[in-house]
Image 1 (cartoon, helix red, strand yellow):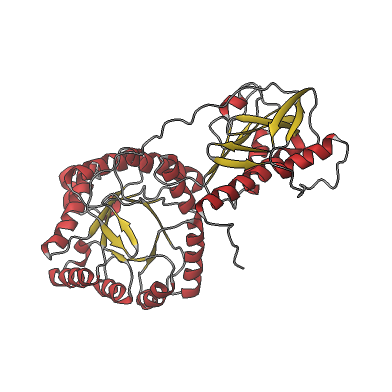
Image 2 (image 1 turned 45 degrees about the horizontal axis):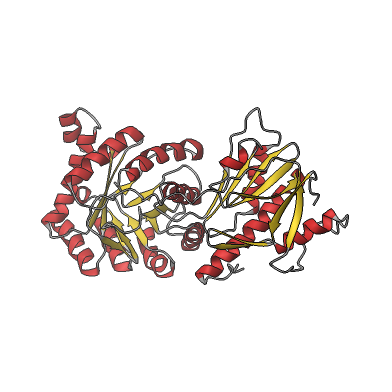
Length: 442
């Protein structure tokens, strides 16, 4: 690593930033070696220097005092009051953390493939998984899947009351069914009684395609009023048989209609609400629609569990859902790489640099924000809220930690330097929490 040289910049090999000990001794060793002309093999050194060592690190880029007091804590949105249910080990509603759901795309009767996809969703951070159950062979597979799954399983049933009973008896953590589709009151009571005895909640799911003809005629089409009337009518059928552990979704493919519908429903009941934009589309547009629809409602305190529905790998649904919650401070952030959109002032390839940093730090599992800025004029100020960052320009980059400029490196060394410091900071956060380093299981 080559250090740009003009004016000196001093920093201490071990400094405390915001209560975290930012150890930089190994990188300091490299810098000292590079400055003395010993470039070595190009890998980071492992020789520890005394923590009190001060090292003069020269820089040709302007140095700004960007340190600022931590901003006051921003409280998350005030949540709508709702009754609490339990989907297996995951509480939903009643002020519980907002959970993220997805749905498998494998044939449920293919048990191995379904369990493999559930494992992938679990690794991505899923809380609850739904599996389709359109055939008897799928219902027959539920007991094995529910027993082996590491996350709660909800069985998605539409018309067959026998499949709903099979799901309950198989140990599924929840059932999605609209009792109006069953049509027989005694069968609805049978399902309600069995679910209540086992503490299994039922989700009612209404969307434009499931509206009754009478409601379409009454309201003149698929309107928020029609969707809410349908949902509360379905919930009423369960209440009639003494079942109340219900959650409701009223999804629509238009985010604006979806927002209006959930707002109306939130005013008329205390059931926990499952948010989603149905048929949102492929990854790019689907995430956008879902972020608008789900994010708007969550910001208003409406919603207890969410699913981002995409025409894509369901793992992408989980990533998007978690991202929405993190953006609203409703879930603790993990790795968050922020970067400027680039402009005429940028003198480095910000897009490529940000992508390289994101890929290199993908395994970090603690809250850590890394800023990649392509301007030495505004970059230090823009990066001051980040834990770690770079303000790059003219083939060089200022490395910042907690708003303090540490030193300047060549552009070719930016990614390596950020990765080194980010991993150090992540290890320190884990140590503070008593977690230790993550273990990779083959």
